[in-house]
Length: 127
Image (cartoon, rainbow, N blue to C red; front, side, top):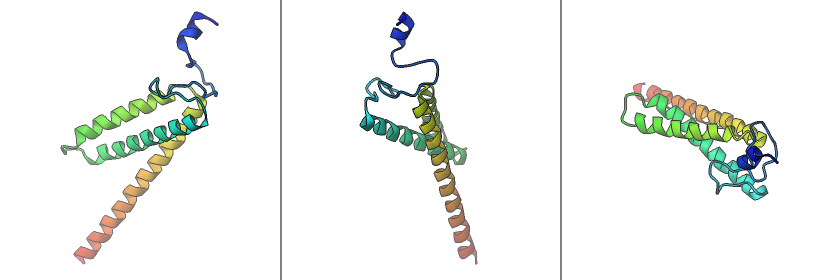
């Protein structure tokens, strides 16, 4: 084992599939079995959901007082998602992309249903 490999620990500068020993964002969030993998995937899903809701919120909050906090939250969550992707662990990479897509779908579907509800309310109230 070279000094470079020892210094890098679990991280590799290429895609790898073994999740044992992988640290997710923080050293205390280490995957060391099925339960910790499920917990890590749950945390990643939550992070993806926050990111997609914050991104949608930024779009609708332009010019309001909530724009800056939502902008900050989206940049923070987006940066953390990027760091998960940069772990180069193929399992985490694929799950993160699937979670981002699923969360974007949920956010967009909810936005469309809210628009439909608003349109219905406007039609009912205006006659």
